Image (cartoon, rainbow, N blue to C red; front, side, top):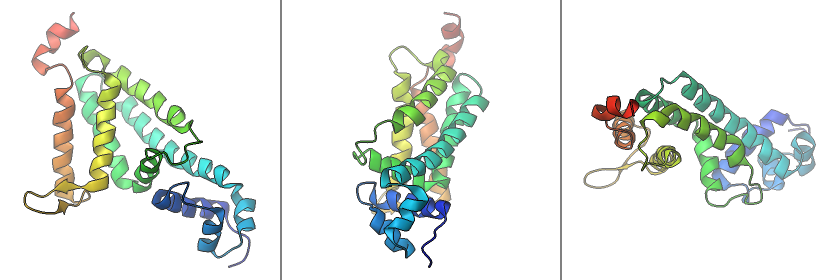
Length: 205
């Protein structure tokens, strides 16, 4: 392969490598070796490793943000919103495993010197989502923890699967298991909201 490389091709390869090895485990030399070029070809196409990582996370996390924001905006307010948001979040991450991989590394203090990503990509979405359900969240439930529970459960499920009754694990990608997990997540989220039979009294104060 010649020394000239396409910028987006580098970004796509780096997305996979950062997802597999983390920011701290990837070097420009490693990316160059994987592409069969010298390191200067990579830096000419995408800049430093930090520049490349920021572009990878921008593209990946913006795609997640768009999907989540669209789901929140479309969702009906109140109790129906939580199911619609949960479904959209789970479906996105089932279809885009590279996003979960990048977040998983960040949660293990990967790229610790790049600290602004969560505030930029996650916090505004949580603010938007909590406003959608605030009328059905009881005072003893933190709405940010509620959505945190959704995030933790989805990422844990996709990272490990589900225990079989006897031995081993079910794959998190198995259609029937996805349906079971989705139903469980709906029940779990419902339990954190105002009970359905209390809603008329709750909404009227």
